[in-house]
Length: 469
Ligand code: ATP
Ligand code: MG
Ligand code: MG
Ligand code: MG
Image 1 (cartoon, rainbow, N blue to C red):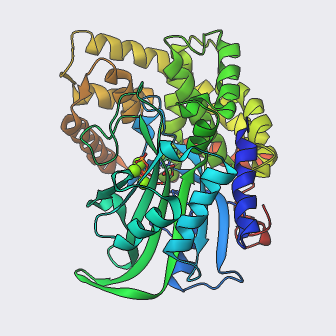
Image 2 (cartoon, protein in one colour):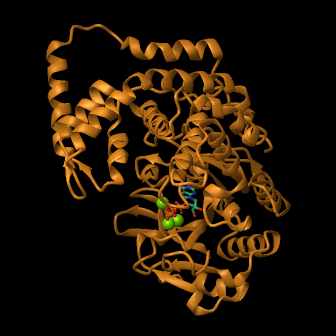
Image 3 (cartoon, helix red, strand yellow):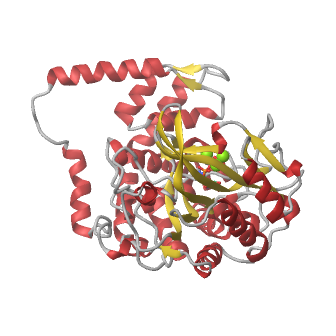
């Protein structure tokens, strides 16, 4: 059985063998797109190559790109711990053609990789296509020998990709793996498609048109290919497990968290272990790429991720800061593939430790308040917005942490009340503002970063961003 590290190499080697340039993952903070919070797909670093704004010395490439989906258009934060297939941080394996090969070759490469190199049984695979994409249907029949009932036509935007309101766009085709009858969920396009039986593993995007303006689309002179396959999902399939959190990499991280807390990794508190392992990866990679916890923007997304994990550490009964003690396990598992983790190890540990030390002083008191305020609430009720705001403002609870804490009991939060309390406080703060300058609170992060050294922004313009993997 192959481990995650070999599965990644097999992918990259296969595409290299087939003429693709191996490209190392770009940092999580996008350098070419100020509107995007984090890189959330493998194609993001290649956006300008697809549109022709940037030239590269190769016309086909393959990468395993670090992605974070914890805010903005793609936000999987609330899925973590609840589905078998979502992470906040994951690796997206991808092959790309910049005006080189198109649909037929893309399908042929994908099918060869998964059925020959990876050896998956064809009868467990099915695909979706955009409903009117006859060309794709034809290739799937010819290349993979799939019958019509295994080529599912989807008419929604799920199978039509676009970069924005204008620019490159086109139909896509996704490959699903059937994990078997024992797991609830229906095939794609069916009413219960959100279950975890049929898991989407690979998305092949056929960039075929240029959307010039709404309603006006012309064929691209040189159609392109963008694909994305979740490394953790294909690893689960290849390792014969259903849940991403059971692959070797997550077993190791969850094992470390189980050892330090003494809580059974397969017992009723399993979900907390999963959240901790997932959020550890997201936090560590974000810090390694230069993001530090703060109260706004990217830094606040990181803080939310860290604090959610810390609540789960508390739920597992950790008496002292836990997260930083898991860093060595992560570096052991992923440091070879991502040397930035090794370089930033001290910074990652210190950042986690300081954040957790500070948050723990208010975490248990906040949880106590939350418990009291919600004791009488049951499924369908909402917590008062004022209370959620007090937890946020006085106890440092990000709103989603409060929501996550109440979710199991089916209790929501009065968002209007929360926002109103926030607005009121901002108005009062503006009225009282005396021009004191930057918040002293956040300065400490910059000091730590200066002391321990950050690794990120160096790589951008240098060859590191594009050397061999
Ligand atoms: P899903 O429908 O399962 O949420 P998606 O359609 O949002 O996935 P894409 O945007 O098509 O995903 O991304 C390409 C591939 O990346 C997916 O087919 C999947 O293998 C992987 N992927 C997407 N989101 C995640 C995630 N949060 N965690 C792990 N892998 C993911
Ligand atoms: Mg999704
Ligand atoms: Mg999908
Ligand atoms: Mg998809």
